[in-house]
Length: 361
Figure (tube, one colour):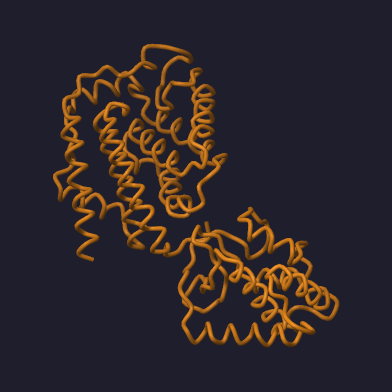
C-alpha cells in the first residue's frame, strides 16, 4: 500500500476539472456525446490511438492530461469512484479513488498508454476498474488515506458487534490475556480509522485509563507458556509470524475492511513484538485477519493447512514449539484462569468510553 496523502479537491479545482473534461469531449467527439460512460470511453479509445501515433507524451502533455480527465470522469459517472487529490506531498494531483482504497492516477496511467509502456487500452482499463478487479498498470494502486465517514461508521458498528461476540464466547480464546489483547487491537484499528496518525501508544493509554490490564492469573499464564514453547520464545514468535504471512498473502479480502485494517495488520507482521507474547500475537492476527477475510471458511482452511505444515496438526497453534504431530499441547490449555469476567467487564468499559468519545467529538 502506497502511503500518500489523499485529500478532497477544492470547489475551484473541481470546476476547472469539469471544464477541462467538457473542452476535451467537445474537441474530440463529433456529434452528440454518448449517454453511457462506456460508450464515451470507446470513443476516447480512438483519441488514445491518435496520440500514440503523433509524437511523444511530453510534447502532448496538455492533450494527455485532458484525455486522462475525460476518462476518469466516466468512472466517476459510473459510480463508486470519486475525484480526489493523491500525492506524496501537498501538491494537487487529480485522481480517481474508491472508498476501499483503490486509486487510479489517471494522468500517469494515460501517459504510460501513450508512451506504450502500458499495453492496456482505455476500454479494458475502464471495465476492470468498474468491476473492482485487480489491475496491473502504472498509476493504478492502493492508497492509504482518510477513510470515508460511511466506511468508518460501518467499521465501528462491526467492531463493536465483534467485541460483543468476543465477550459472549470468552473461553474460545486460550487465556484472559489473549482475550484482552484481541479486544485491544480491535479498538486500535477503530481509533486509527477515526483519527489519522493515531498511535498504538495512545490506544494503550486509553485502556490504562479504564483500568487495564484487566487479566490477572500471572502464574497460570507463565506456566501455560512454559509448556507451549519454554525457552524457545523467538522460535514460537517466528512460527506465528511466518504462518500468518503465508495466510495473509493468499487471503481473499473484503475490500473496505482491507483498506482500513491492512496498515495495522502489516505493521504487526513487520514488528511482531507489538502483539506481545507469541500466544497473544497469534490470537490478535487470527482475529484481525479473520475479520478482513472475504470467505471465512476458506481462511480457516488455509490456516489449518499452515498449522499442519508447521506442526503436523491442523488444530495445533502456530506458537507451539514441540515435536511434530498430536500431543498434549494441542488440547485446550485446561488452565485455572479466574479473570475471564474481569477482562469481559474491562472490555465493556473501554467500549463505553469509545462511544462517549464519539458523542463528545
